[in-house]
Image (tube, rainbow, N blue to C red):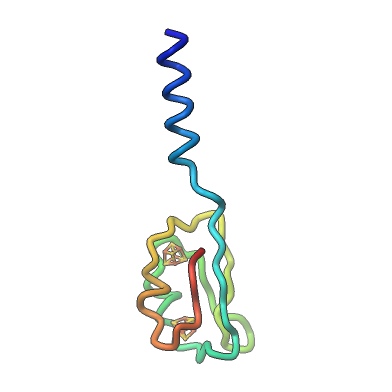
Amino acid sequence: MGMEATSVKKKEQIQAKKPVEIEVVEVWCKGCNICVQICPKDCLALDKNGKVEVVHLENCSRCLLCELLCPDFAIRIR
Ligand code: SF4
Ligand code: SF4
């Protein structure tokens, strides 16, 4: 039982990822809203200046859709 528990714990540690970071290059963001609409977790919104902002980082599933679909390469997931 001890061995099994240890190996499960190790596997979980290996699979654990570092916390997600969402990097926005504000000067490149044109506020097209694509990422906001495509995000399945509602992590993103446009701020009062029409630039994307992260509103729910904790929900991000790292699906990368925002990064892949931003026409201006203004958002990156790390
Ligand atoms: S990686 Fe996916 S879940 Fe995270 S902010 Fe982008 S679209 Fe949303
Ligand atoms: S898809 Fe890119 S340009 Fe459009 S709002 Fe999102 S970050 Fe800004």
